[in-house]
Image (cartoon, rainbow, N blue to C red):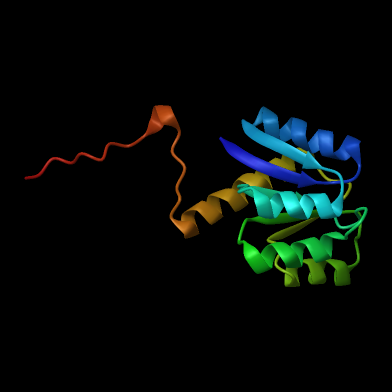
Length: 141
């Protein structure tokens, strides 16, 4: 099952994101503190990370940079910071996408799926549901 990490200090936003992702059969962990979120993101293997910028103890830009030094996990910033300079900085530090709050939860889910599919395609780790696996046995002629 897909495992997503949300690093978001606002419990209401984190729960909204979690609810929509879980409806789409994703397992979700939430961390509300920047430093704790960074530690968790480096300690465990997540399929994707959703990251706020304005966090207690450590900001999202620092977290993004630190994650990119160690991992290539898809990372989406979801932030209330709307200035172009913030978007450019986040993407320049290695974020794969930048979504501005308020956001559509359905759009977030669509972007999460798109980034995970793209990452799986590029890394060769294609996901196949248990009931829909293709056969590895081929007829030889």
